[in-house]
Image (cartoon, rainbow, N blue to C red):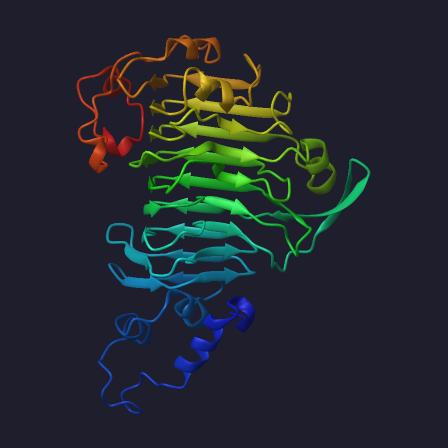
Length: 377
């Protein structure tokens, strides 16, 4: 692992810890446990653990380990943080700037997070990277564009108290543009607690104007327990189109997918779910929304309508077995103008205790067809 992997204060802390041996010969008072477990028990920050113990870009936390992150964990190389599938480690954010600021791919797997102390984005595509850019001409101007080839993936995680963006971008070196190939959320539970309503998006690539080739949300739940909310769930900027990405990276299509997932009170205050004029309505753009439950998400027919970027009856769109309900448990029939599959489910899914994050469903058509996040069936 290169020492440049984590920079700033985190690297200084790592060096400081390097001066203290955990070997019992040198430190007779140390417990008889491995060095990383000793550091975790001593309260070592996650950024330091990555700097000291990641092997080939992979940090494996012990089962049920409890770790803190006090600030931004910044990376320029691919990083994976993983733990035990059945007994995941827990990372508690302790500073208002805590979060992941990445300049390359990131995988978080089998780890739970409590973000309550942070007002920063959970994941930020940052200013620094070791990726070599490609230059493309768009609208008469040359731009440096940066492709993250490997996935940004959140798998089997419970992410609590996200007050800000789930994922956002900033310009690379103040001018370059991010183009992640894959953004994936799979088998994860995300509790949103925004502090105020605004024009932002939970997945927001608007600073530079790029977009993801593929964004997939599957087998997951996003739910909001506050009155405040963001306007959009996904928002790509309009500065670039697929033609620009084809020139730069050879991308032949882009996709946006929601499958077997549950969404509760997301974009509830007149929101518009999706906005991506650079790719919407294109024959090379594909939209898949299947077996999902939307409760009080956006207004009127906005979920399927804005999922398509405001385009009607798009030929490359696939819909099946979705539920669109108001906060009063009434089916939004006008969604059928845009989800024309004829498979919409009009029944109340009968969530067990949504106010406390329990979305188990019973006695409904959703149970019969197995829709929504599978964890609640």
